[in-house]
Image (cartoon, rainbow, N blue to C red):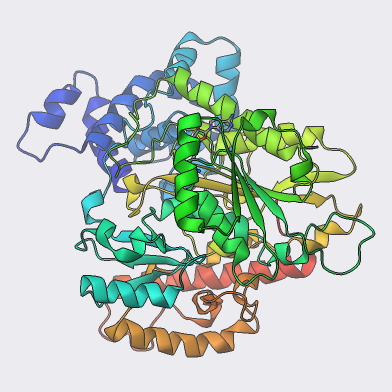
Length: 581
Ligand SMILES: C[S@@+](CC[C@H](N)C(=O)[O-])C[C@H]1O[C@@H](n2cnc3c(N)ncnc32)[C@H](O)[C@@H]1O
């Protein structure tokens, strides 16, 4: 990542004795001053250097390895990011990251040792939120939100995708109306399109102005399993033959103003014979009123959403209205540190104390969700980019929630089949392996994503292998697959792109037979042509004569890596029936 490289360049002279000060180095010369994010990273790496040296003093193997490194400054920056930075992880890739991640466990253990032994410098750095509070070092989106595409979600309770595409083209005189490549039913319009609120489809609730990131949760919950499991009704009723006509119930635990509620209701009622309900809770009386209004506009009188003014933590799993409950969407209050394009943006300079208090509520709510015996699927999301509210909550909830389970059952993370094309994944933290982190989806406007910062984790309840039949029903994306499906984010309908799409579709039909589960459900989803097995497409074009050598080399390397991953995946598939972690 350029941010790390730039920070390490600035750090070099500062590590020398009697070198210049940071301010004069950054702002005193003729060179362009560093970005706010780079400046903050350097500041905090410097501040944490003593602690990082102590960590290396304990982590002997890592120290030995690092001694041979030429770029010591980069090592400090990356060490800081991994152990103390706002993400508690290293974003991007590269040789420096690989060198450090080899010793990740040893390094983290050394930091914990210092802290538990009462090392004052370590405790000070950790209690000040690791130096950088979320947002401080990463408060500037890489691309200005005003240059992002405009997103609208098609509300399939009231309109179809093709109706919305046709209407958008006509209303805005805009041929480039795209359908998002990964997130179903989201339209992508150029940033130059204005006055979306004046679009009659918005006024009628047929399309919803909703940020792309905010659509991830319902898609993860609705399609995470890769099958329309709700079509089989409330499966836990024993002794009943045939389909249960009463439909299933999902709970949106922290629902207002209701964007994700109505999105989920639309997903689980698309093409259904029975009505599936979403019970939408919120404990704030004012916000529940907004939710009711939204539901009226977006759901009409369909009754698919049932708003309730209630505290989720007080909801009992025995509630008679929830006997058909199968899934929970949990999008609790958070710091909002990922939101950069809203006037409601929460001040992201959260104190460590506020973050701790938010994270403890989030954990409580997630563990509570896991305690409903009738629930098999959970999606947990935040619009925060802080690891404390995201991966750390997930890791702790898995430990706490599973400790309470009996009867050979456990919760596990699954890479949502419906989001297998989503590129950015979670980061490994204490209690969460790299493999588990790959199941989690993130978005990050501070690192180039054209949407707000967001986090989503999808869980499924399983019987531990050998103890029951439900293990085999897990249909989520495999952990390896998420690494393979890394294509561009958007497809644009029109002109050359359209031709390309048609060509791709043709190839896709052939690819479907052996493709991933989400893409091979035959007619279940309208946009299934989007999900193809990438192995069918070589990354290297047939004619490479005009390609610069360096680029070709890079592509060949990437292609080889992809093939190796696929081979590993195939082997894994043969030897392992389980798909979650
Ligand atoms: C991040 S917002 C939810 C946004 C919503 N999911 C959407 O997409 O429109 C969090 C909501 O959780 C509600 N909330 C916080 N604690 C709660 C609790 N214990 N029970 C129910 N709702 C709660 C807040 O009032 C707030 O409306």
